[in-house]
Length: 403
Image 1 (tube, rainbow, N blue to C red):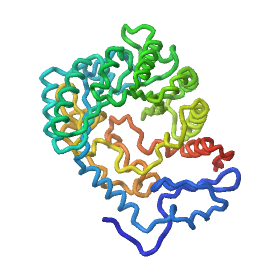
Image 2: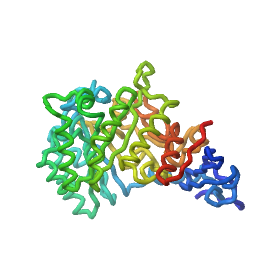
Image 3: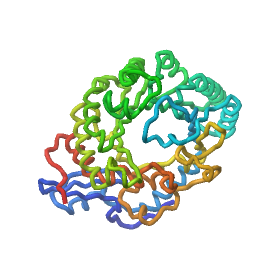
Image 4: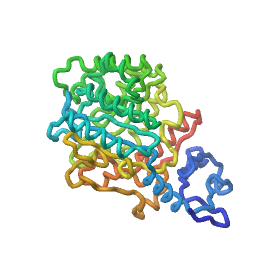
């Protein structure tokens, strides 16, 4: 339970931003309320920005419940660490090349069956390397688990993370039968930049091939999510990419989002630092609004969550091709074997952060020295870009005043 107070008081999670017009934008990360006020203290008159509970305790409570919840089971299966591309930012580039054997596959299937018997929903993510190198194994695993879930009245879904170079018509035509609800594809630029970064092995005209494969999947009503990675080096080309592929917006099952490539390597001149990210995001968000990629503020996911990280959940596992079981795709060193993780108890800097409801402590792998994740809520350093984009979406001719 959480503590109730006798009187309303100001929420810990109000973010107040002065606008160039002299007004004030106030956003509450706990309940996602956003308003524009004439004066700085006007928000204190409205319940959306007040509370009568211990908000920190409430957030801890829902983290606890989420970590104990067995209704939803999430499994990531590394089909292989081999790939037909050689992306320079891939965290697996120095890994030994391994692929699942039939024996290991059957052990994984049995593990999933045993651990999810009390679940209401089983979700499997097929990962790599390039998972479509072994699509027959994906079919086998999917059919086994679909039969199991159907017999036990459990919902079954899956998704695939792929470069889409092997996303043939034959494979696309199998996806719905296998309950694949989403296919995620990464694009890093237009033809020259994309093919340079992917550095494919014996895949020719890869840019055209991948776009053709994506459109065929969309025509067959497969949900496709395009992840666009950007850094300083390819940023201008990413703008060109968004222009080139804007025709895909006509498909209802198409989604596109952008993410900066982060690195702890301070010597990497292409890394976008925290004090630069706001300007980069604003430019790209505004362009995505104009091109029809961002249609509403839902794109920014400014809603309170119960937990961010699958690694903390009771029934969440990642299976490596050698049969080892980890809690996360980013926690795959030997020291991570069999470890349990929790976000219930957080450091004071998290509990005192106004963005806590939106990240709930964030990604567990941040605590691992091999982490490739950011340490904080993705928009924390670029919230002005987000707010300015929401103003633009709502045709409000105003913007955050730079302090």
